[in-house]
Length: 370
Image (cartoon, rainbow, N blue to C red; front, side, top):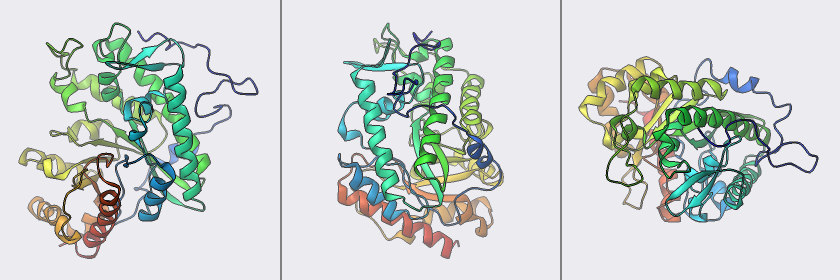
């Protein structure tokens, strides 16, 4: 079991209430998030947004770029170049409730109490929210925030013995419960910072395919952890999706995205690298669209590459729509255009150009779905 999943002492705020990076959770209501789960998507037709990470270490510049580019669907920028605690695993570990992690040579490991690494993650996340609040003054509409999902987190976080949380099914359940509670608090903080926002949560699950296939290496690297039963994977995801009080989009830029499993888990959208789709995925894509699941289609690489014209970069999506016999009018309502993955490894110039390209490509789909 995780060492501090039970009720334990939390860092105290100035007034003695228990708090973490998010401040006290007393009196927080999640009703608005729950209501967001029902009904149509909070984003409109012809939408575009980013995946999450941006290059560099200047969070104000990154958030200014994001909010200025995606006027109808901004997101909370992530800057992993700042170091441990700003990376996707450390950032999400900082959101956990009553579970703490520290940096070891092998990666992030569960510890007994919040130390320097946890406090650093809290501090950076607070700075990110400050920048978000600054550059979204008066904004009303969908707003995306990101966190690592329960299975990628279980594959990356280590127990005290150095093995991944994934090696202990009880620990996996406890981790998912802690994550769910922490994400509720994170989303509530985002709503307080941007009162007009309809918050959407993106769960990053790049390791999900490896978890299902039994390809996550053990600490020794000589073997792999056994594949997790698909029903268990689905159940844990559904618990998070149902518990956070907001619409959830699942993101993976790995091959073999389990579209059907994610839909059964209740996600409202699936984000993926469009270029990695195979013929085997097409039936699941059609079922997703007909079932009302949004497709966040990643059309551009996350690292510098020459960009084609925006209309041409979504030509494959139009072709797929025709091949599946889907109504052209549903295209811009069902598809959100994004880069294929985060942009942390890109140059600042490419990142800005790629985000602007996504906006123009989405408009092209809306203007000319056929």
